[in-house]
Length: 387
Length: 134
Ligand SMILES: [Zn+2]
Image (cartoon, rainbow over all chains, first blue to last red):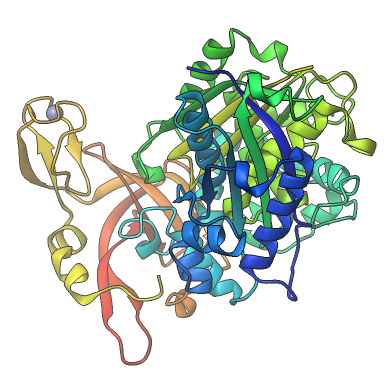
């Protein structure tokens, strides 16, 4: 196994991009990553693209070939990866394995989703495919409803409050307002969240991540070669993935994601680190309760104390462990397949010291946590400043 | 998915109409919906049909205001994860109640209801929901 490094990163401006389609946003992100890596197209010998629902959202499958075509990179091996909202994180892991194994020498990993070309109802139906279609969605479940079940249990078992959940959205909007690529550039208050319309009780509109168009891309190389291309290589020191039963009702507990705990345990073992060693972390906050559960499952806080820690500001930019400096899925936006790659891009910027207004001081080690559906897939990566 | 294929609905009739799941005779674990492989024993498992009583309690719940296509007439509705008395949990609606009537632990019993309609010309799907035990 070879050590693998990130030599270039890029992302499109996340948001409602009515004037740009799937191809345009992917190419935008891809060009930025390639420019950042200072490499030529001919040097790339493989590509992975994470996208969840191009088929149902824009009627386009065969996305691997499509992107190779419009990036002008044919005939390279180009593969689409799908793992619901974890498509990006899982695609990144495929790229990592391709380089680590020695089969590829320079790989581009992208993630993208074009979500605003169809109605909100159609988006909900498409995203519903991340759950158990026959036994959850058929019965009238929606993704907000599934996370509402988790929130209700977390409130019941640990006394977590709606205000504590709201504080996650407030913090993530604060960070997003300091990220020029984020969908939302406005700060909000606890009251904004509490007064927003209930989607699936106790979750309100401002507890939910939005519908977003966006793409992100990174360039990977063997660490040894990376040093010839960049003065600021980012080393991948752990790559872990786990699965769980797909239907939420089949889980033993609703207040933790077993796949997160297992993937985190593996990742920390690979990197020979503990949660205390992480300087900055991007977690999968598709709903505010998901961030609270994630910071517990990853080991930053004890089970049941994530809500309190969030409300006390421990996850803010200047807190004990800054979480979702990009604005997270809530503030930066959640173009499903792009999210896992955007998390990597944000951590790379943090470790390179290029996060400007939202820079975490002296960040040396960062982590990404990407979840599919209600937790049936989890991909975790730990990155280290390689310079 | 706004509509569900007719053969799929037909295949699911024993489970959705009668709460027939199965149980592994090797490790004594009950399953709903049916599994073709016991996840505990895998190929050593021995699965046999099991009809559930339909009695259970609320494990978690939510009042769903923004509903999927096909459920507009029911909106808003209380959706819950029900723990059946035999162990397995299912996702289903709780009928004839408001959010305030339901608590974690509330006792419920299965009722047979229309689940959803696939548009004006499509199939009407039926299956289990639950009612609060007074
Ligand atoms: Zn068994």
